[in-house]
Image (cartoon, rainbow, N blue to C red):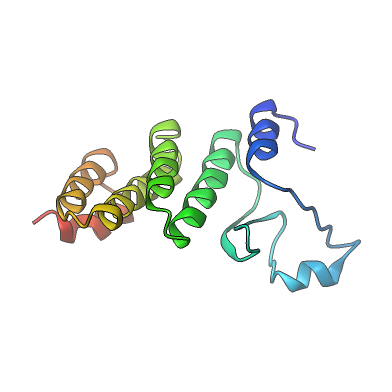
Length: 146
């Protein structure tokens, strides 16, 4: 289904993929509130949607979005160490994608949630500002820099 081996392997190792084709199953498409194709939904083991993204993307961007979804799922389930690890995978493994700044931000939040140490937020603000100064995530983290 996925011509790129990295994508196929990542999906096989991390997901139970389900394909709903709008022409073959419009009610299934409606059920998830999909507005565009393709719509990728990352749900946790309870079936709760934790992340979604739409449209076709180049391989690195696609993989970073999938991994970001896994990180957000771990975060929502308060698995702070898993969330931080996955967010850092995105930030470090896909630094040129749009997901990277967001992942770096949430990695710091995950670290803070796990430790309660506000220094994690200050360090995160500095890292996001340094690596992605024009991103909305640098602006969001700026309150922690003081």
